Amino acid sequence: MAPVTTAAELLALLEGQASVEGAAATRRRVPEPVPVLGVRMGTLFDIAKRASTLPPAEIDLLAAEDCYEARLAAFCLLDFRARRTPGEPWLLESYLRHHDRIITWDMVDRAAPWVVGATVSSGPYDVLHDLARSADPLRRRTAITAPLWFVRRGTDADLAEGFTVAAGLCDDPEPVVTNAVGIYLGHAGDRDPGALDALLAAHEPSMPRRSYRLAIRKRRAG
Image (cartoon, rainbow, N blue to C red; front, side):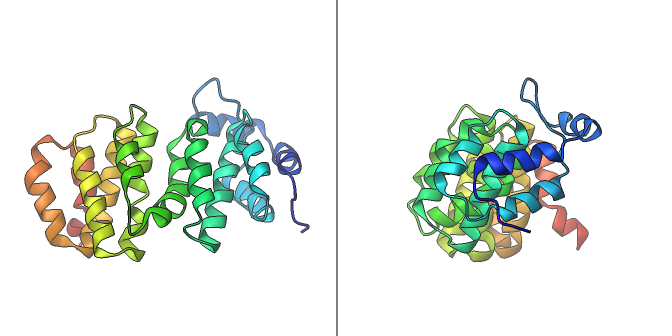
């Protein structure tokens, strides 16, 4: 298939895959009044891959669109670019500049590890702590989802910083943050069980049960 070279072309392809049934399913996770097209996720990713060389200005145009699928495509493109060339500063800048366009947890999870985590690896980590202090739960989710990159590819110092961010969010009341904290701890605990034990010893009484169960799920499975 021919590559997609503009945001308008990508949006037209998404609109061509819209369906009423898909829109009803998508609406269950996308809040009103954000418009939804109802494009299957696999189809959306396939279209976005054809636009993987889209210039930054065109990605900006996608992020500015009203509909959920166009916004998600913009963050997919940032993720694709980060996987090819991790740590490029413009990717992090673009992600943060468009963070207000993020409306669902899956938009965070798609891009945060490679776009944010890979860029702040080896420090400084100020951006993670700034995000963790935000009043926006989705920014706080970015703060703890980005360090997933540290688990497999980061230094010991990176991993420790992820535990520090997790400790600060352990008693967060928002489910969109609670789940992400537990997911990070479950993975990071595989690499450093002692650090996980220390964090749980200090914070288990105040942690939401969902977060705690996710943090220890791999131990239960073993």
